[in-house]
Image (cartoon, rainbow, N blue to C red; front, side, top):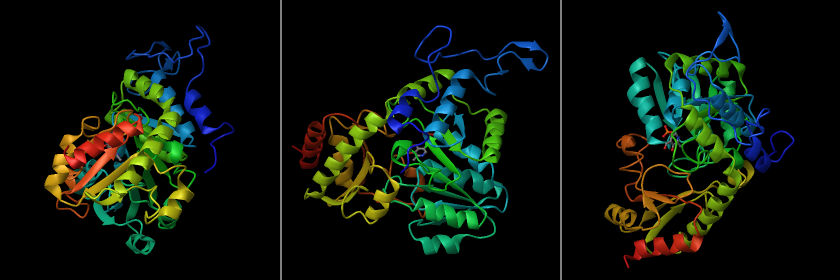
Length: 384
Ligand SMILES: Cc1ncc(COP(=O)(O)O)c(C=O)c1O
């Protein structure tokens, strides 16, 4: 994976999107809460801003930062990851087909299946790891391929450059939900995808204190349409939330390093537990796409899931028995979280081609001491 621009990624994360203020010397960007901006004459906004839904300085800083980190030329911020997803789905019209990976965030499936389908968008679901299946699923009507890698919650890994190439040949746009990996571990635009999307609520913000979505692209056309929808539909983040995400992004690299190290250790430890029937983590030597993980990602990430030999009831008990891992939805923050996808984050995929195992427990591994996290899981697994 190449470094974006001339600086190394760790340096970019600290400085992306802002510089010390020219007047005050403040090293931290200001939060600009103004909803509207003075015009010198009709149609001549003094500082280039008119109304804060259309654009404001704090959001601009955040949008520049994500563009820089993803190696794109444009960044567009939204009120949530789902608002960003919807803005991209707005590209699809009646009769268009969306090719969706068979393991994605439950809310993405819900929006495609329950909302977009009502507007005549047809959704095809395939295992995007199977490139023959991907090639044969592309039709003249396929306008968008939507993938996660690693996927939520099964941690499948998809060959982004090959899927993007197949999509481009068919005239379809490739969108990679890069929430799990972050641009520190994987840069989809460099691999040929058209769009990298984030629930910035997760690793980019990193502290579970702001809900925001972001998109990065190198396409002027995609960015122009997204900015149009951002303004037209108005699902924008507040300047304060933009500032929080920008602050969180400055420590992305160090947080990810620690979360990845902890997750690798826990995943390996879980493989030796008699209570556990399967561990899903892209860093394990027997992960089915191990070679692809090494080619496509800097490190395998801080997310993992595992299945309980004793089944669903035991999975529920374990998820409720941890003391350090908090039982909660969401992921990607400094604190470790545990959840049951089938009834929590992925409840909306029940009965669909994306259904997830009921004995599956998902961990978002935080940056606490690994020994404490292992001890917590041990007491939860053994019930002692
Ligand atoms: C992979 C992934 N994409 C998108 C989303 C949606 O983001 P948000 O909750 O910020 O709307 C989530 C939320 O959990 C997610 O896990």
